[in-house]
Length: 528
Image 1: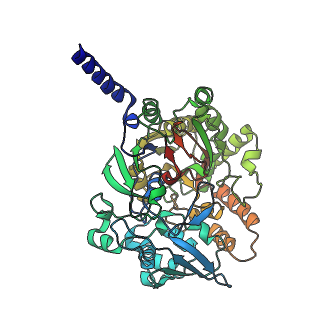
Image 2 (image 1 turned 30 degrees about the horizontal axis):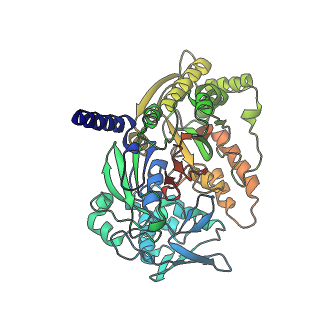
Image 3 (image 1 turned 30 degrees about the vertical axis):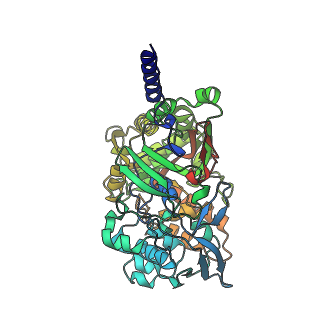
């Protein structure tokens, strides 16, 4: 009888462990299971340019500074910094720390990383960001007119980093949180090239290090013993699961396999506000969902076509009926709640729906299209339940309101990014989340030479406004309004809505905090 009872108890334990999933297993150290919206494009800081990669990079690496759980800029690799009287020189003093392989992190590691980012052959999508920081010679290097070693960044000694600017940038420290500015371990990058971030090679200077990466399944991180604050890390290991399907993530969360999701399934928002109010968290983000036109391909090189398609989309229908999770309809590119953004209501938003449609139809006819001769386009979007619904709704509106014939094309995110880079699309789903809380972080991407300019939009008028934006004593708020007017007139994009990020967080996860970039860092979390 004792043997039978023992077997039954053992069987019960096995079944219970299976039913509740990985997060219920008795790990030797606190472990966190997090959903990620997609497979990261890379774990190389200089090549990362989307949120799935940035989320993990924030665990693996430390830049000069980072943003804490209160939203404040705090020291990270730099313990202090100072600005010269003329605003053209910044000096950062680094703390003593090590890479995960035991070698010291030195100022030269930042110099090499920043030079690598602006080197044309690297393929860094955020090279423009260093140019926007006005670092000396960045523009000329990116254009191939000067060598990378002329970039205005130097290391007078191992623990001092000097940055030379071409013009004052008062918010420069705010910009330093972006992965493209993280340091790189010289010897590892030189030895393994683009393969330096593979699990068997990578070394990191952040609170965690890479343990394993099973593509399209999960990425495992463990706490970095060389990290100065290692003992204060409550979570000693974390796994990221790439789950583009919100339904799949939700089901795994309910089963106990996940402690945190990145989103929730369509149609579940109202239900969860009553059934799981303490687990549902909604963040208003500094980001915009939009459709980008390929302005280099006819007929989308015609502003009339682009504006007609923009006016024919009902944003309110998308946010209220298709999504219904608190998203805000976007008629401007920059969210109205961003720091420094003036109150401005564009003409299209003021107009009644019928008036917008009348203008759209007139522009459509002027561009040479009609029901007898309809515009035909392909709408490219990445795998996601909500984005599929939006694409279907957009195709229906364009057909009903203008007679446009739309073909929907769905691909994984990496493939969409590749197609956009090759300019192999008509209209593509895109997004932008600000790298720092200032409109400059968003408007800059539509500059003619910006590598994040997905529509490849070129406008001398817009470029001139961008140039004025960072000049001393500029009326920046008026310039922001003028840039919105130019974008509305030329319509290289269709702003759809401003992001909110609804997600589920298990009650056993403590320390969750809201942040407008939706990049909650594991270092501030704990697990009961």
